[in-house]
Image (cartoon, rainbow, N blue to C red; front, side, top):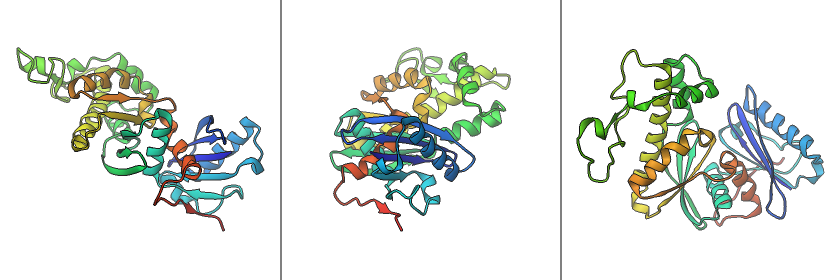
Length: 283
C-alpha cells in the first residue's frame, strides 16, 4: 500500500492506494498544528484499516503543512510531492479525463491545467475558504461552517446582489435575467444573517467560477474539475450549473473531491510523471 497525505495547517487528509489502484478509507483529521494532525491521521488510518507499518511501501506527503515535516513518517520511506502535480494526478484519476482545468478550492484557489502528462500550474485567485471564514467572522460573528451553510440555505441572494433583471427589462447577450450583475450591490444595512450568509458563499463561489473560466479561455478546455473542501458546500450544486449555462462549459465535482490532492500525492509514487521527481526525505 502507498499512503498519500495532504497536510494542511490544521487539517490533514489521508488515503491509501493498493497495488490494484483502489482508494482505501479516505479520512481527515483536525488538530491545532500540521504535525499533530499528520501523525493523528496516520495513526487513525492504520488502526481503522488494521494495517501494519511494514505493509506501507511508501508515504507521500504534500500540501502547505508538509514543509513542517523533515523526516520519515514512522520510519517508513517518505517523500514530498509537488502539490500542483498532486492536484492534477488526483483529479485525472477520479475523473478519467486527460484534458481539464483542476480548480483546487482551499484557503485560496489554484488552477492546474491537465493535458495528458503535461500537468502545470497556470495561476489562481486569492479567494477561497479563507475568504469565506474571514468575511463570516466579521459579518456573521461566526466561522462555524455548518452554521454558515445552514443560514445560507435559508437566505435569498436577491436581497443582497444586483441581478441583470434588476437593471434591465430584457436579458443581455449571453446573460440571463437571473445572472449576477453586482455582488452585494443590493445589500442593506439591516440585511438578515441568512441573506448575508447566502451572499458571502455566493460571492466566493461565483468569483472562483468566473475567474477560473476567464483565466483559462485560451486553453480551449471546456471541462473544469472542482476539488478541495469547498466542494462539500451544497451551494456548489446550485451555483455552478448557472456558470455552466452562461459560459458553455462543464463543471465536475468528482467522487473523493476533497481527497484528490492526497490521492494524487500517492500516485506521484505509483505512476511517475516525466520530469517530476518527488523529494525524498529519508535519512
